[in-house]
Length: 228
Image (tube, one colour):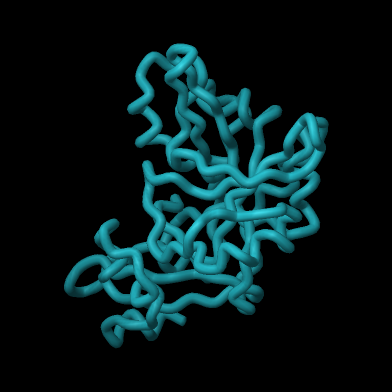
């Protein structure tokens, strides 16, 4: 799964995703149920737009919006069949910008967090889905989730799932509502280990109340450093 991630350079989003402004602050420990930056295609202007959405998908048909806290991720292998995700997969896809994500591994002394990012440290995008839930004319919620897939060799040392990281050349394909299902499936793959790095980080990230640069500093017991 993907349960925490970072986005430390919001200004980089403008060029990377062809948007005009960001209006968001650097984040070092983004957690479920918080608002996250989402890029999607504006159907009228046919341009990319940046929005903030609740992390945890709330289907438009549900009577219980609190169900979103359980749907921060969608398995790419079953996303077409699951009622909670299939409509969004067909026509409400989005990019969720990040520059790294966290996973935990059980080690002597307890679980320890590891941080994964691209080799150059640049901003990338998770494959995401979005939905709009509306109770009344004045009460609505726009939410999103991150697709996951089988892990690459690097992530597999820590966890049995990883988020789908899209190559930049696939951004427009993913956002295009006319893209065929076959083309979409071809994008839901593990990102190459050779283009990523990982290292253990401080237990600061264990608490959602900690959202500072120290969360990304290499740190941890000796046994955790032997994994990479």
